[in-house]
Image (tube, rainbow, N blue to C red; front, side, top):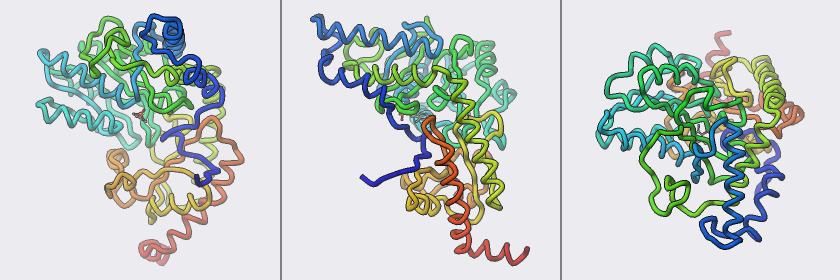
Length: 393
Ligand SMILES: *Cc1c(COP(=O)(O)O)cnc(C)c1O
């Protein structure tokens, strides 16, 4: 394994906390029983899963019978969207979303479009927020679902979820939010928010990968996505991922205890990073909202450079970060999120996302701030466009 010393890609995934791993370990060994079995070692697992369900439910403010474990955030999004689409087919075929959703939502909707569903993709403003008037205007008689993310994974912008929920309710439309980036970064109470469904994922808040959950409001019946056994009250089949569920519960408990303190500390680091980059690097643009923003998100576009080259140079210095472009997934198109906030292609290509986690320190940020300006300058020296601009100054 190569050593990554400075990890600033916490929006992609996070390290599992030691307390989380410790809580999980016994469920690979002595507590290995199948939770659906009647004998003691199985029943024991069942009890622990129910305790975990209570912890996760408390963390997001729902009842235990409203929370269902899944194998990922992507699965929770798929289930919420396809579940409503199929079960409410007789009511209508129209779904409203935003242009900046995660692919777990966007690609699910594209799949449904091929089956005859109609999808409205609401535009966002230059900061990445939808307009509530646009939303109201998009709702029609055939609208069965609104799915809008709580907070964006690339630019960190937080959407007006409570207001959206109110509009959805007034029009009697089901509202799902992908809160995968928000859980552990924003205080959340689903009942106060008034959302009908909410997705979360363990590995985004220092829990294990491959486990997530979907909150489904009491009384709301949607089609199942995974068919098979009677697990999760007959609503999501598959032998329970006991270690994963225990890990997710421990992680959410840790992530939401003293959350306001964490938010204050991490947003201080974020604001410091933003301020220093703006001070030290010319021709840069902060992407996303200045205040309605995830506490750990920093996203900049640097003119005259390629985000991919920047990432490679940072990697050579032991820094892990992410770029707004989707080059890593085999496509040369810039990120749909950066295009949706109105960035021209060439600027969207030169983007850098630094996502700060609870474990990052000011010393690590200072290291990044020391190495970043000379790297940007070096890459710019290789750009013919930059030469021209400098000649003009
Ligand atoms: C990571 C992420 C997902 C997918 O979650 P997985 O557990 O990795 O499948 C969905 N939505 C958002 C906003 C994300 O950041």
